[in-house]
Amino acid sequence: STTSLLLTTPTRSASNLDLILDLDLDQDQDQDQAIDHQQSFLRRIPTSRTLNDIPNALDTLSEIRTRLRNAPTIWFLDYDGTLAPIVEDPDTAYIPTQTRDTLKELATQYKVAIVSGRSRQKVESFVKLDELFYAGSHGFDIRGPRNSLVQHSVAEKFLPELERARGNIHELVGNVKGVRIEDNWLAFSVHWRMCDKSEVPEIERCVDEVLQRFPSLRKTHGKCVFEVRPRLDWDKGKAVEWLLNTLDMDYQRIVPIYIGDDITDEDAFKVLKYRGISCIVADDVALSNGKNHKTNAHYRLRNPAEVEQFLRAFLY
Image 1 (tube, rainbow, N blue to C red):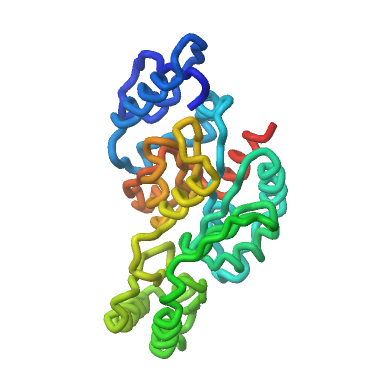
Image 2 (image 1 turned 90 degrees about the vertical axis):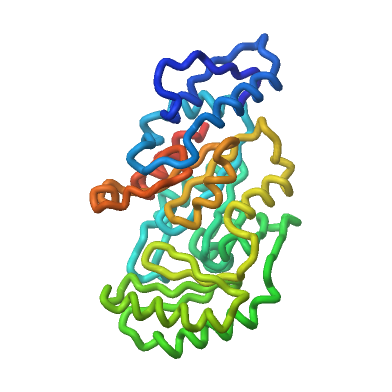
């Protein structure tokens, strides 16, 4: 929210998110009252909607700019499928030069954090920008920019179990054509994008079989990947909350923005449901193929190219 924001009278259904951004400046309106009014209105939004129900963020830029006007903003961005296109070989998921240039300039004007399921070191090696905050391993490993004191690691005690489980899974499926097992330090990924799809149920069965022997670990799903991480109350949403608190940005006038493409990003979307702006990255092909799932995101962007365009729109 911005200084003295006042919601105008809606003329459309309250289930349409763009109503929350139909805001006008009113210098005589008390800021606390305006914030309370806005928060009350936000709670009228349905808990979750399908991808088809939410507008494209690029189509509502003026409304989003209205909400961000004069408001301190921090950006949280997923990596794969958000900043970098999804590719068959995860080791070649390079960020486009134009996107890196936009991120570099964005970081001169805002705080910017990359929140990824990849290891922090791997994402840093892809992005190559020291001025950003990085939260790797689904937020279990957080570091600030170079020379920053921001540092937080969760679940290091689980490293032996993660290593053993990863080795056991590799023994069972490592020879399956197309399987890639990626060490993300405080988590690991079993990629099956390049596998024969008929092999996937057996791959998942083997992962589940191993994890039965490691009750401290759990499996989650991603895009053509099984993610294994510690069974702790910690995720990308918790990482966002921790960074907001650590950076003294955990108050209502701040407008955090989160952009991500995967189910693991829904934890962050939930955290920002009534206090920030969130965008899910999902292309039209996915929707036409029946992947019109529910989401807690406010907006949609179709691909990493649109993400870069959206970021660039907020440079000044």
